[in-house]
Length: 337
Image 1 (spheres, rainbow, N blue to C red):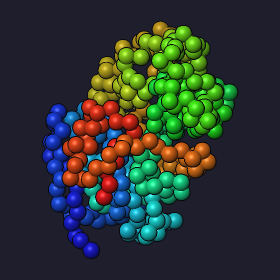
Image 2: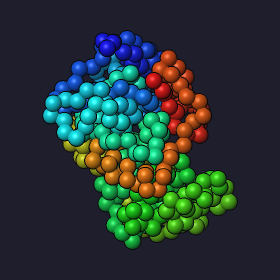
Image 3: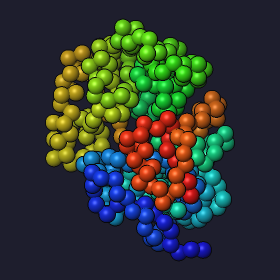
């Protein structure tokens, strides 16, 4: 077997996308890890935040750093404490925050972060499902702690996030409202939305009111509108707008960092408070047991993540990153090995 592999790395944080493909040793695994031969890795907006250094307050990395947060592949070696996985198993994962590195031919991954691949998905599709699936799952279960009979509105929910969040919310017994483009209407209702708002025809602010929860996928510009439609005592969970005090406390950050995030999030917290709404921010983490639950939803509803039409090789990593940064791809951008 080769002793070295190709890996897409940065040597420093930079505003420019200038990732290098290096030959580095194939990682050794510890007793709780598996060595995975990567088949496909997905490129996320998160990569931009990492390579520019924007999230180094949340998670700082030693450099050089191999980029990449989610992948699907085949187990090549199993650490001696790992139960239930064998060489040849197909797995998918959102890598542990502290140890990313999906843009490489091999990855050493803590077995607690992986799950068997959904049977209805290819490697490419599975690579695109883990991060989004966990975001939806952690958002609904942990941040919102949503209960059966409550309502959730997902503006911009016609994309890949909504595809995972809608059936998970449905399985939790929630009343699900989505806004999005007209093409996604039929599919979104089919996988469990109760109401669909075509944003080209009507504005959700005029149609939706008094919901328990909003999950924001659009960011700062929609913040005020989203607050208007949440009932007092409800929650606004954003995947985009930015961290706040609550986020820093939940992550047990040191006091100076808690101070920074309290300041950074103060204007969002204050606006939310005026509406008697709680503002939450989510930065998704790895969790293999949650991924197994997500697999059930994916298989039951035959959820297939939309993929961008072009596949990239690791040699085209900068082009793939540019596509995500500026190209508005119509689905997940995938790197195949």
